[in-house]
Length: 354
Image (cartoon, rainbow, N blue to C red; front, side, top):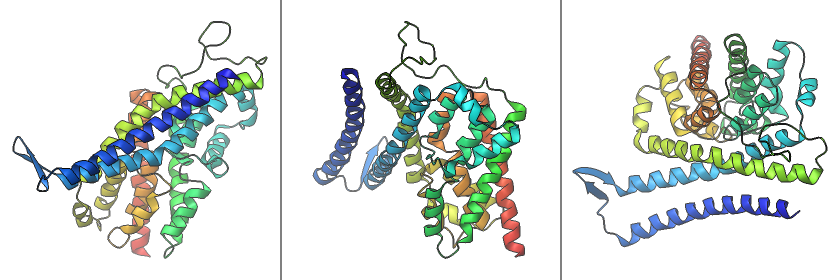
């Protein structure tokens, strides 16, 4: 019980410290804005940096961090629970026999097990370490952040004037995740994990990953908290770096540039995919951003934004690079990109013909 209290305090302290750090940065910026007369810009080596641009960067950066932290915590806790309470034998009994059935099940698991893309990578990595085939875990990693009730509801609200967008989004996400899972099953095996997964040492003095059936519930709970803390810190640094890059993109990329290419069949899709990759918005909120472009962009490009972003974005790629080998991450990004482009282009063609 004493160890349990220590681990709970460690997790709470970590989250509170990160939020306190964000709070300090926020109010420090406000204080500097009020006390320093910068005449709206700073000149450093003849380079002009607007103060409002810096404040915008700071606001976006902190909003992404604060938005993502709850989902990261959910993801690492789910991963730790899988590690300590679910055995490889239980998972294998649950999975269907054929490859196609496994991919189909993984594509639809988000309906009963919704996980945001901010916390999906540690869950997928843990599933692979527990014996789930790579293609099933990757399919789940791609599909679950989109094919779930939360995202469907937010999309319906954002596109209340065009409710078909909900079906279009879920349908395209299913196609991309299922096809990507099939391609992964043909080209990759299960040896694509990078390094080791954080876990606590067992009583026998070793550091390998196995279950002790004699462990009590309290022991497993303590181990779960310890694993969650370790994985939270491991994934957190990549979240911070990805959020920084996403905030930079949102601050520097002009919206007018996107609007100028919004009606091209190919250019609109490419622009919105790049935009989605850069801004790294949570899948439960990205539909509202897509809806704001609906009068200027094609239907296919809006779907590309809402499907590609939750599957492949800056912070997700950085976390995947920590979990998987570089070659696999690059190939998965290429596969998903091509499938999204193909599907979105078909939607553009159908929309124009219709």
